[in-house]
Length: 489
Image (cartoon, rainbow, N blue to C red):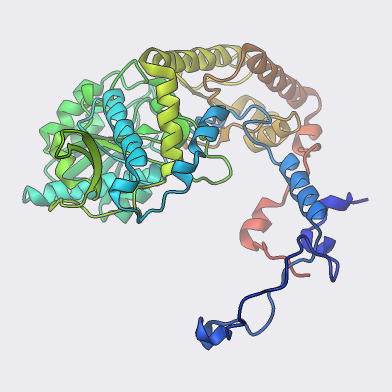
């Protein structure tokens, strides 16, 4: 039997039910067409459910309890840095001075917001070793695209028209998509046997037609690119620029700065490295740091600090940037998430941020060493904040990585990233972050050990998983061919 509040809200609807009672209108009744053109007015009432306030609350609370999120359980989603979000960040980001600010307020009325954004930029410059920052990109992929537009503008300003962007086969899927959107051709090079950049393959494609090299460091296998200095020298020797995908920055805070090891531009996933995990689809915030050679091309406006006629610091939006690629986001960017990142960094300070990365690395290495006894570890090198296992050992027994991922859900834990990176067969990509306790990690190890045992002794329980979730296993092939997301009452 379906529980009452498991029903769709339309199924709870009763004619005449109301969630709120409003007083009679006591202002003159102005004909709708005097305010809105007749062609834009509804011809029929909106099809909305009629439910009471308790029914609305119970319905949505019931739904929320079915959703898995970082406040409910472990979320080891590789390359996504799903760390716990401190609630003080939420409280401060909701201060009325921030939430009541209007995007079109004159600069003098939003000095507090502009000051926070300026100081966040200064902190991100220090963390990354970059010379300038923009807060406009809405998330990581948007940061990639923005960086590539700036790289294009840089080359055009220098009377060059290279057509290719090079990236390794371990790159995030958004990297080649961003390259194509920016009008470049993708050149992919294979990784070497260690899972890192193959310098010889890079040397083969490094020529005057290369605009840039996109690299994640540590890469998607969790491996640090130990030859990064040689990579940078090679790329710069071709007249190209070196871009760092900052998805894995949680491994480097206070330890290494992209700008010090040769990168010209790096995007920040502030919504995951510096709190506000992005589960559920967002919103994100993807700031972008650049070296001085790219600073003139930053999206306009840029938040700047200057002195007023009394010598006091004031903050403003600088639109007068003749070489700018133009705005890539309305107004200041996704400010609420940027405020959370500011609070997170201020709370930790420099030493605290280093501890964040060190703890994330220790947690990942601990899990790696435990789990490699029951699952294959394709690359033996010392990984950092995340690592990639292979389910090949279980596949021989008829259990796919997808089956393992479904079974994990039965234990109240979100599945790791699976089938990525593509260079690892039956990939299981795990990132525990620094916010998980040893007890939490040990619990995950026991879950994975139990699943490994089941693969050998009771495979059917894995193949039919999940068993304890609100929705059972879907026919994913059918759902992809015939998606149906509409409710028809």
